[in-house]
Length: 317
Image (tube, rainbow, N blue to C red; front, side, top):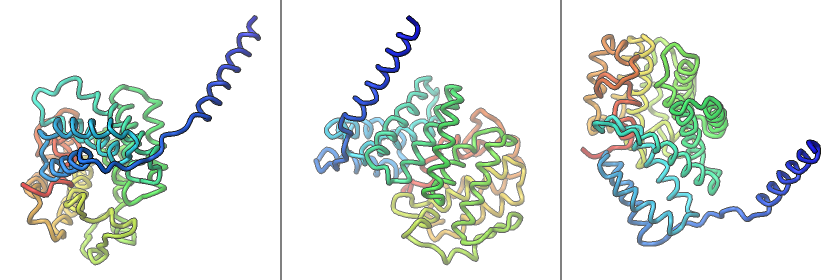
């Protein structure tokens, strides 16, 4: 009887695999409707204004557009990022609802959809991996964490200049003496090496000799500012400085922070005062950055500061 039961289970598993494989996959189809155009415009306007309060309306529009055409990888990608934005900057909400954790589940769902529809987009690969890792951390699902970690490794292989940063950014919230935090820190250094085209001096990381390498094309475009992320350059150095402060390397951190001054857009950056305060308080921030609870935007590591997305993406005050 037991052998018969096992045989039946194997047979059903085989039937399921064949049925799934023979079922047509979703095929990408870009939307050209007025609703999708309005939803996309609303997304970018809200993000570039740093308007956290606009998320709810944007979500309504994007979801309606997505339901109109669930085969558009752009719409699912926007929804994934919208939910990541909502949970990342949750400390703007007082009190923070317990249901905020559902945002990471939704982010993973939409990034997975976008990745299946457009597997060549290495940014989506990285965001999907990040959402897997964060979901595992939130729900104490170690297997999902491991899956997320190896997904990040694959994303790094495809676009290291982009995904070394995104993967390490998520790890910035971990204990400063943990192996994963240290690896995330090393990934920031590797990003810098790739952007500079040489190995950066770890003790005196002045980036000014490499500013001439700025480009808007190729893999190295991830190192610089763009229309999508108007202050990506400044935000990168703000986060990297925070991670170094968390480790206790305050002198090196101050040099890293000051590299943000090299940006041609620095004076128009809405968060330059946040960086200048960090330069001033680097020594004081070592202990506060190691805290797991939110203190204030000035005393909490960037990822959990309440401005972890818009620090790179906001362009208007």
